[in-house]
Image 1 (cartoon, rainbow, N blue to C red):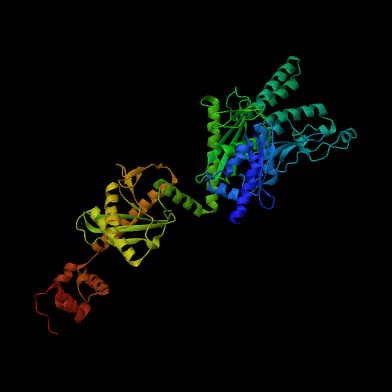
Image 2: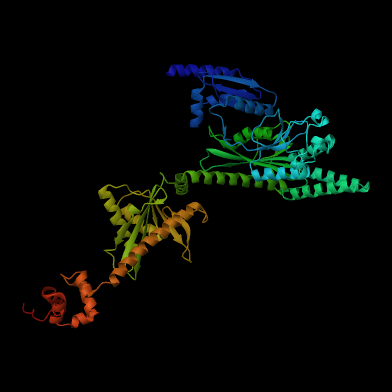
Length: 616
């Protein structure tokens, strides 16, 4: 598109905006093919839509959207809630490219009460409202089976699949089945249970599905007492058993407060990159939680948390058929609902409900993250690298991390180790061992400087990739001596961090910067565990190298210093004479008898250098 064509496009769109009314409504952006690419809502259509064409719009994704718009249409409504509902229905109808996406890939089961002559109650994943009334969905399958179990045990709806009719019952077409003999059904199909009694049971089952268990329990208790007063003891006993089962079921539910009757609760949890949001919904009826569900939404235009909640609340309330007059939310909402009010609790039971909703949202986010990382382990490593990058405010992802450690005993057999992690995983082929050459005595700082100088001087010379982050096994002192070499001597710009230990020699803090400062990092977090693994690995590597070197030194024999005498000759001498002392004391004849003339003379001459060489 040329500059002139773009100017004509913007002029056309701005002319539409100028003629828009200043009333609530929904607007639709269309592309060059006439396809709706975005549906929005507004309390003031003219003011909201004109904001898209202001020069100060700086969000990249919004600029992309605006560049795709070729036409604008809109609908006006009377109230803010009508605008919300209209937006919701249009998004469902057209599924616009740039609108928030509800990631509802999994169909959760619901419980249906059919519209048959003798209704059935069972679970289903196929929703067809012509066939019955649906309750749910149930994200937790165990909770759904608990509800079905109490309904089957208490109200005994029929479980057969026959299309039972009034005429069929009157004609005696049906027979009792096994469920009747197992006391799971009271056989309304053969008239052993009256139609009115069966329908009353179904009505009560609906109350359980709606969450009105307390009111139903009170009604059953009063009916039981009434039957007992009228000396109908069998009916009273049956009602008593039903009441007890219902009370046990309610006891297992989350009881919040008997003063809270009908409330919706919404909370929102973001992921680390703010690409997705998890909106948890809790419905409370008569003080008891009877619905809890978390939806995942994908942001398309960097929508705010308020935008997402405003999109989700009407849709979720519609899905669950909620008409609660009070909606608990975590922050102020600019919009209003026609038949409900937003409420932000500060304390008490409603505050507890909001915290419970937030906890469920965070748990859902954690579960989704773990599930994704099981399918793609690299995703976890990338997440940890990004987290470390954000914590340290690094300019690039710390893909290659190197860590150093020294090991010696009073300065003897001094060595150092360097380990390399790539993508948060050990790259053992890149590990390096160093014998300390220029430092005498137990000077850890000087040893560290020697090793760092040798490593990065060689990497510069060989032009191999330098690390994205250096981690020292120590605190401020170790960081400073490494910085002196890396930055002051070698003129390299490599970030340096340190892992400091407490009095019990346990890693307790991450240091970074110049001068070093403590980085806020929970010691029970995954990132902290990975960093301590790096520290433990470099410590293990350096200690193992030091032990190997010390062991070789301890096993060194004076025989190894004799030029021309190899391990086999040495072992033969030790086998015959048992010790180096006896080898030293042996005469030339004995040594030549064991080793032969040439090697025997070499060994004898080594231990008796002042004596003349024996005649050959």
